[in-house]
Length: 92
Ligand SMILES: [Zn+2]
Image (cartoon, rainbow, N blue to C red; front, side):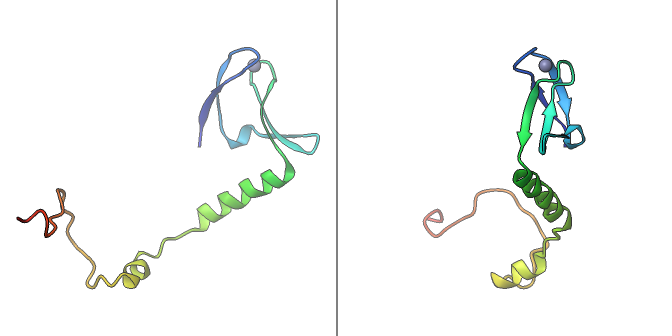
């Protein structure tokens, strides 16, 4: 994931991703690529939460079959339609 942000010190608009984070004084920092001003700083606890979030996102495989089983849709719909869903009030 790449994002852009502007430096509050030199106004440089840089493009960054997670690989730009470096360890400084036991913190995880993102520094302006032009002047070195710290744009973001994460504590060791925040860093662990970020890494855990990435791991959960990468390992998550949605179980759509089981999700539909719980709401009682059998067989699963095989067509997708667009429009307004008719209810008893709309059918008058
Ligand atoms: Zn800067």
